[in-house]
Image 1: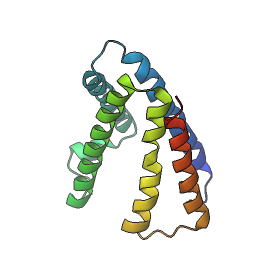
Image 2: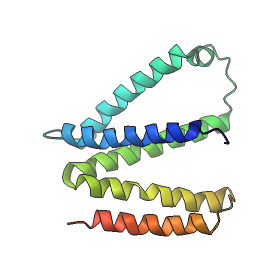
Image 3: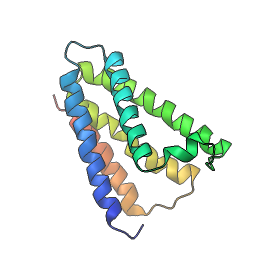
Length: 147
């Protein structure tokens, strides 16, 4: 975790997330949000399979020579289901709601993750982290109610 590479990747993820929101909102014009989410998921799956294939990660899985445990499969499936539900709700909200407000509410996931990491994983958080959650909550409220 000492490598600064995670910061660059995190910033790229945030930029990609912004692209999902902006391009998604533009693409929802005249399109059912469930259909749009399904199409996005298919495109995402194709890209991810191509990347996994290109990096040599798909071969071991297809040949049965992977060390994915039943527990790993369970949590990967649950993560996939959670993500699908999240994106269905996100695109439905984006269809009718203000882009910045929907995105702000979606970022409440940061507060949930912070809390769950303390409760479920017993990860210690200092006062700065807790103040950050409070500032985040205030920011989400201000952005979501900006009308």
